[in-house]
Image (cartoon, protein in one colour):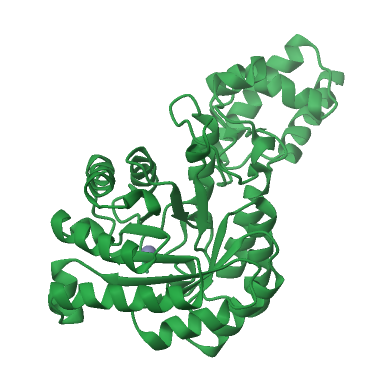
Length: 390
Ligand code: KIV
Ligand code: ZN
């Protein structure tokens, strides 16, 4: 695999993720999250938005001081004070980055920024240049890139690269793009902008239409080599692309996604639990990779298949993402094979007639009860044994 097939994972749980209403974290919590991100091999950690508050500044600079491996990025609007503050916050990082952004779409320029296209081009040259005077690693983002006319977006990207940006991020800020459109945007920009090969292109996708992960992978197919994402898909509104889904898609489908990334997946479950605990955002049961049910099977047909060969119904091994084992949940859809296995696990060996009686009573119970616990099955079997002895 060639060097250019390496995908850099940029985690923004502590910045975009923390922007989810109600998800704010304390300094101590942010340090814990940064530590696990660094341990798991995330390439870039966006640790916060230093100008936003003294607390954010302190968090970014503390994470910058303590982190040994990952690049630490601080976010800055296209304003001198923001850029200087971000530069100050990442100053002590082994490897620091200033990430500055400005809106480029007509709707943002007219209603939010009240600036012309020409003014925004000047702002890009000025602010990226300022950041580049402070640090070598500068990322520039075109906010609302996916609703920006391609000709103008090309001129903005060209200005940012000329001013010294080393990473160019083209976000789908409002989660509006489809995979084909997003891929095509990267292809066109990379083909049309002079010196496009001097920068690494980055995807940053919001999940308003549930397309964030698909769009991120489409952007990579279009030539992007950095993916911005968050643990559990935390982020503004419907959130960002989920890091765990991106990493496992790349690992599981290497046949059609020929890239490598340095994240070690066995940390994923632990990171998910930590982020859920500190943000107060529960993880939905059926969430891909890290949901409680991601490796649980209830249907009799699936349980039977799993007991014969796990690959019948699992495309990933639970232990690869830090889950101890597959769970076969006993419920009304379970069949004889799983019930027999459960009895063995619980230490029971009963004859065929007793087994059939116990199985019938288990099914009756499962019809009445949402959760059938091991204790319920034990009681049922004990009762069966006692009745047989009468
Ligand atoms: O969604 C977005 O456009 C952002 C930028 C600040 C990168 O989060
Ligand atoms: Zn965002």
